[in-house]
Image 1 (tube, helix red, strand yellow):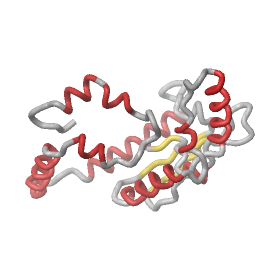
Image 2 (cartoon, rainbow, N blue to C red):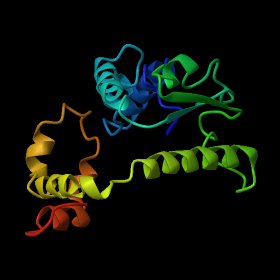
Image 3 (cartoon, one colour):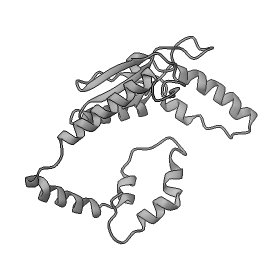
Image 4 (tube, rainbow, N blue to C red):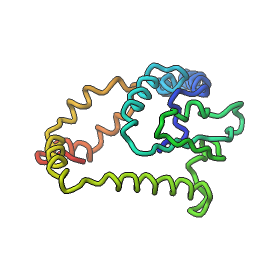
Length: 190
């Protein structure tokens, strides 16, 4: 499920980059603007990421892409336009929500119409996953697969991941929880 994800970038990223660069000058280099470069329209990084996901997404169940219909006050357009929020793949269900980019996943309560809509989508995703439950015949294959996963070295896997924006997600590998999982001598399944 995606909420206002700019699969094809956002025109708003340009303005964020501009203001971020000004703030970077004023704060003597403490503002990271590289991520905003990657979020601009026609970004190579975003294009490659989207292409890789679309290749893999065909084998998934339903994918829900929720997109905003209201502008944030002070902006001339939406943060993420519908044509960027919706990938256009066959198993994708686009869902408009009457909210701006900031409030599209903030619900007033569990009885709100938007909350109920999202909850229904999540239930459908769970139902899809349960339909794909492994049968008794498939158990040996699943067990072999799990055994293979235990031998995967996460450090080798991470070395093959394309260049992230500088500083992005470094905190994940610096956490004590990740380090203790990485250093386990037994199973390495999360």
